[in-house]
Amino acid sequence: MRASGGHHHTEQEEAYIVVAGSGRILLDGEIHELRLWDVVRISPTVVRAVEAGPDGLEFIAVGSDRPEGGDGHQVPAEWPD
Image 1: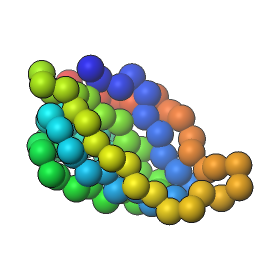
Image 2: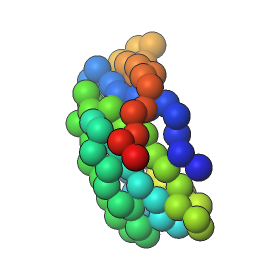
Image 3: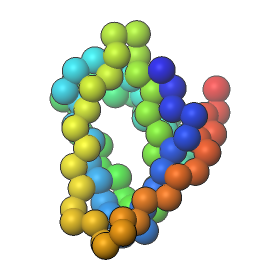
C-alpha cells in the first residue's frame, strides 16, 4: 500500500526502524528501498511517505519531544513512478 500523502516537520527530527516486511520510502521526491532492520534518519523539513512491499511493512518511528501543539504538516506525496 502506498501513502498518497506525506508529511514534514518544522523542528522534529525522526528515525524509522523497519521491524518487519519491506517497502520503499519517498524522501523529498527520491525513492529508497527499505528492508528488515534498516534505519532511516529524517531531517525535519524533508517530506516523507512510505509504501509497503508485497509482504507488508512495519516500522517504529522515533522522534524527539514535539513542540506544544505539534509541528507536523501534511502534504501530497508525489511518487515519481
